[in-house]
Amino acid sequence: MRAFLQKLFGRRTAASVGGEDFSWMFPPNTMIYPAPWARYWHDQITYGIAGFADIFCHDGSLVDAMRANGLKTALCVGNGISQEPRALAWAGFDVTALDLSPFATEMAKKAAPPEEFLAGLVGVEPYATIRSACACP
Image 1 (cartoon, helix red, strand yellow):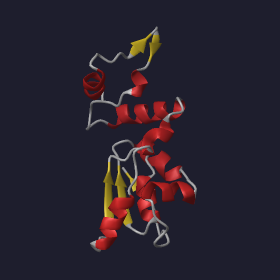
Image 2 (image 1 turned 60 degrees about the vertical axis):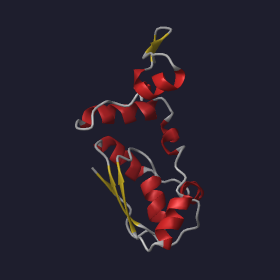
Image 3 (image 1 turned 180 degrees about the horizontal axis):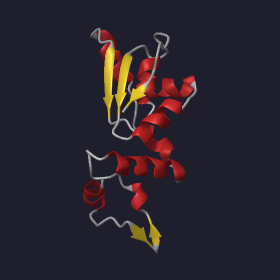
Image 4 (image 1 turned 45 degrees about the vertical axis):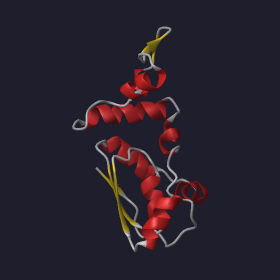
């Protein structure tokens, strides 16, 4: 993320600005240790920006393509606290959601977003009833 921001804005990103620590905004650099990811997602929730986890999730075209090709399952890897797996299940797919952080997995499972929110993520009406939506670390 830091490299992306540096490239995007042409300057170094700072974890500290004006004496305030903003290191919590940057995802960890590890893909093998769950503790930094648990801390990252906890901080996202604590600072009130966790709702942005789904800001770029617009799966309407994906759902249309999956249905057109007879696909019925989806694997969401590294979904964090995103509700995309739940939205895909709501749209009628059998979904397995995996994340390195048990904390993020638990938060995603506990969330109960309204149907309007789920419809906004997948851009469709419900296709089937959710039999069982779960996430597993």
